[in-house]
Length: 507
Ligand code: MSP
Image (cartoon, protein in one colour):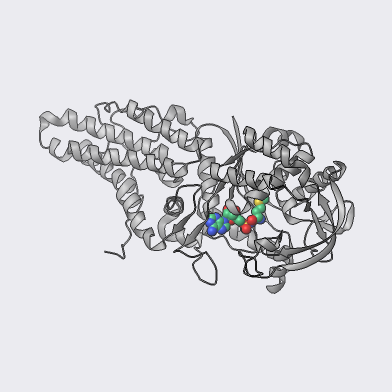
């Protein structure tokens, strides 16, 4: 099976922060899960680099827009590397492959007969890069950016979005276009049922020069949203490599934050229908979070730098802490004061301690080698856990997948307490049981490695490399079958501490 998933492409004027890192880590976990199952996976990330907001920021910093974008794109590339994001491609909307594909797409859009010119006056928020209605404003200001939108009077090209309301509603109701979670689907449906208005797809080139010109009217540029949505197609070869495009399109899922759901669930499908392309199978909108009870903002100094987080807790720790704060899909609050406690409880004392304890006992009682007695049979229990793990990924309930990993870890801890290997070791008659206990634990640690890998790849690889049985690239379905330790007597490689304990400020 092929699996094509995407993150939003982030505006390049900002630095990577906890919000964009959250979406990107979540998408990476899903991509890695699919790869580990043996699906042919393509994971796309990137940056949105056109528009008035970016040009203004570049000017403020004394850089040309192109130089500004080159510099800032690197901030994202570096941050994603620190978080072990395994994207297959990183698209930038200033690349020729994007602008060429967009020219073909817009030419088709024009040919569809769904565009028309109109004089227009509207309220434009540059921060959002979108038009606003009076009713969207709070005290005359955009609630997200706290600025009064510009009054824009222009002659622009419009797209007959209103023509698509019934069709898109039907596709969503039928499930041909899955909008998830359900609460978000209902929001989108009620938005569509209020009636859709046509949208401007171009802006005046004189006012927004840093953008892609309309192919047939060089006084106009393409409205950034209509162009950047198309990155999902241009990255896989639209108009340039038709065979490659056909192999990957449509996307299996676009992962987005709830703030940009309407663009993805309404405008994007309508544009695709107009040019005769198939629609993505699913759009998943996760919730938004505040940090320590407040909206993330630079002025408050509460926007978390993902690289700092990784420096403090390691790349796996940072990924875990971002994802473990709230159910995926729901809104939440990140309490940074809880990071150390949570890291210590779940990772240092959880998986980290389990692995080092089991290996220390194998070292002490079995000379560091795989025991000669076979593991006890936990197959049925593991089958149930893996089933629930797969179901969690099917629903993109990433928090549930994490919960199952914790369940397995806790199961092992309880088993150690119950068997007390250190007591069994005192009585030679109990040695077969000691060996069986340790073999069972080693096999369970191998399974913990497999289960961790999508979420915490460094940990997953370290645990699986212990056994050196070439697990990577092997379908998970095979690797997860209980009882695949290397032959008895195989000496295990050394394992560095996975999650060094943090000094807890509360203790
Ligand atoms: N350029 C558009 C996306 C185009 S996709 C074709 C854009 N960029 S953005 O830089 O503003 O990124 C928005 C995304 O950042 C959100 O959808 C979400 O993924 C992430 N988040 C920003 N703030 C967030 C929170 N407070 N909480 C969770 N995610 C947040 O919009």
